[in-house]
Each structure stands twice: as structure tokens, then as C-alpha cells.
Image (cartoon, rainbow, N blue to C red; front, side, top):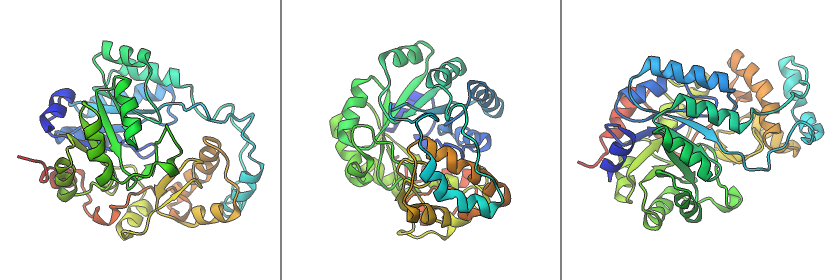
Length: 348
């Protein structure tokens, strides 16, 4: 099973770094690739020019394969013209006031056009293009394969896995409800798609023929061994790597992961307008208590204004502290050490 991913991606070990949207770093991506796995870099919100710069920086940092990650548009994203930010802006105004910041004016657009992002990734020609929030079109698959790019898609249910295989992807990431960050369901609401990794992976393996990568709750050798026992061909780890000094997480974020227990994380729409798993803080509690959350990506843009300032000042209570349910198992500080721990669980 593991050999299928090694050959598919040109890697030595079937261990994949989670693509952190907003928390990816060149150092961490390169470290995982150099260790023999597949380093990944999340490109959420990146302009085409910045995507080109990231790809060039990664090629300067590692000669090994890496993945670039994009969010597929779902069609329900709001624009600045129809965002209706009145209530949501009022809900976060006390946070802006505490930080001494004015509420920002609306931008021309919340996100760059997906087609422009895709064109930049295709030009960059990474070893792998990983996708979330839907299935790729036939045109996307053909364009990627023409350039020698492998494509992975992320699913949260068996039905999504079947649809993903029909779209022609090369491998499927089965993301259990334990996973950190956004729940990337696309056939039903994420609240109706909260299948745990232990239940999801074997059912997806039984339903499709392409390699399946287990994600959610994998933080040490035991999680890796369990994933392969369930039929996975590889694993994707996020929180364990997010704790390391090579990630772009703040010191406050790392400290929050280090202090987490099995019941610390919650699912919330407070920070982005989409359901995501993280460690609750003042921002999450205050936004939820006021009951006004804008749709995605308006909410993500709105909170992003104070999150950037809070990060600059080292204030974790106003940041997005993404983490999975295995956060208490993430106790190593260096990416090489995390990789070695995960690799110890691989089958012989």
C-alpha cells in the first residue's frame, strides 16, 4: 500500500504534511520533503504573483517533491457587495476597539479569482496539487496531468470519496472529524459529515480503488500504524507539525497546542464563517456569544484584520488557534523529530 504513494509522488515515505492555509512556511514544507515525505504549502488567498514566489522559494529550499494546495470555489462565497457585514462587524468591534484599530473598509474583493490561482499553480508545476472543498473539473485534471502534476482531493464521507474518484484524482485524503482546521465537506453540510477517522478510512478504502491517505488524529507512530491497519496507503499529519518551530504558527499558538487536552478543541464558524476545529479563545467565545457571523469569506476577511494585528503583538486570545483532537500528542518541537516519530509507525 505504502509503495503506491511512494511511486505516485516520488517520495521515500508515505507521510504528508497538512497544507496549512495561512500557517504554511517554506522551512516546514522543505523540511518534510527533505526528510523523504511530501511537504505541502497552503495557498489560501494567495495572488498568482505570490504563488509563483512561493514555488520559487520552495525550489530553492528543497530539491524534493512538494505539494501546493488550493481551495476550490463552492459557489456560495459572498462578495463585498452582498456580504451584509453590519451585524458581524458590530460583533467584532469590541475586539478592534481593544486593539486600538478602526473597523476596516470593504476591499474590492475578498479572494483572488480561482482560475488565476490555478494558472499560477499549473505554471509552477509542483509534484502534487492538493484540493479541498469539492471535486476538480475534467479540464483541471487534464491540464494538471499534461504537466505531470498529480492531483489529490479531500473528502469527509464515503459519498464524497466516490465522487472524487469519479473526477479522476490520483489519490484521496480521507479527513476525519478529529482533524484541525476547516471541515472541507462538499456534498452535505459539514455538521452532517462528522465521521471519525477510525470509521471513515476503512469505508473509503472499501469504496474506491485509488490510494487513500488518512488524516485526522495522526500525531505519532501509533496513529500511523492504526491508519495502515485500516487500509490507508499513507498519512497526513497537521497539528504535530504545526507545533514545531519550522511552522508559521505563533508562539502563543504553539503554547496553546502544548496545553491542550483531548477535549480542548471545538468546532466553530466564528473565525471564518465556515466550520473549523481549533482551540477556543476570547475571540471565538465573544463572537459566538454575540450571535452574528458573516458568511464565508466575509467573516474570514473581517476577523483576519484583527488576527494579523494580534499575531504581530503576540496576543493568542485574538488569533485562530487551529488544532486537532490529537493536540495533546503533539509534544515535539522539531519537524525532523516529528517525521521520525511518524515514520516509526510505518509497516515494514
